[in-house]
Image 1: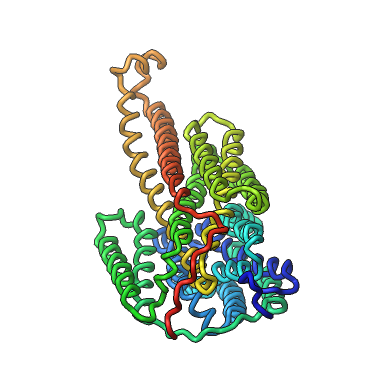
Image 2: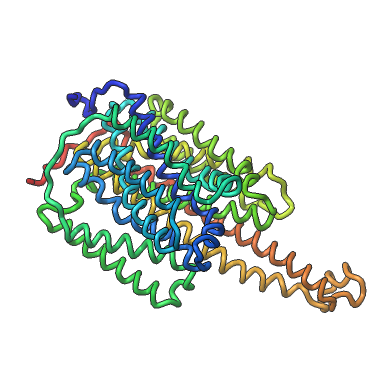
Length: 509
């Protein structure tokens, strides 16, 4: 294989390579959400409590977050194809071990190993697609990659619910076996071998970044369980996270051979893209975290119905991703990003009109509009973020891109969950003040003397709970709409993909 002048590799079977790496990517992304709905069944079989079963999710998230930045160095040192194949094989093997776990301790251990092996799959798949496609095809390549990244979390809960109800929670992990085997065989046969680069490993830099990322993910995942900053654990994790990130930033600015080359941050498109993908992470998974419980608690939708109602969101995302990949050749990608953000904000504004009495029409419509918006944002944003970046930074840059997106998702979910919990209490207190024998509007609607009935009071309290919860969801949607609108001016900082910057001088190895 020879590198073309346009900084891409001319390879045969480009379509088969794309299919193989995308199968692996979808398999990994699905596992971030597919296990959530199976937790109640796991808890019974593994003998875990309500608090400890959440470590099944926490262990995977934290392990993957810590190892993700390492994928760039590993791929350069040991070979990109070799690391990708080991990651896929290890992910499938640890998935099987999760499926046969016999206790909470073994499940947490296997999930940590699964996170370690799965961490490199997403960033390396993006790097492969960027490397085997010329710049003018990056939009189409990122459309394929983005479809797996963004549709996976949407169908994950529905697929997990169906597998758990129809078979057993263990099939949530066993399902990875056939997909993983096909992906491994395809990657083994068609992935190109890339040149290796011996680069000294910065143990201290990686250690500080791992400390910052790991402590932050623990804080975000554990915060709701321990009541956030009323817990000494959260304060400890916050201090560790700030310390790790602070020391890491200082270190890479002074070290002659840092873990992440700070020269990549001099590329304005890439730096702006990191901020954008952070916002996209907040919007994508935060809204996905809110809607299933809302549909279950307020509207009593079963898991399968919830999945069908939310499916149009994924359809909208895939359609616009394909369209955006083609439109980028004739339309300024920055305009597509702005259009996508406006559509996403419109969908969130539509969600602020949700009521407990509505039917599924507005849920489907708003989800479809949001899918259109996220598709128009993700594809051009990903292509533009790497358009002017020196190709030799791609390994580290794609791992950082994935890490920032995942951190944004974690922060977004934690914030909307916290706001939801606090607002429910506030709204319930305010609405309850109207339930009083001194409220003439209420007493006029009830038979005389019935307000003291226990059954009636319970019924009224249930109605207040539903209304308080609905108002809290609406407040969350409004907050996400404001975040989306606030991100639009960032598009002004992006350069057109045709404008390239001079390559930065390489650090001596």
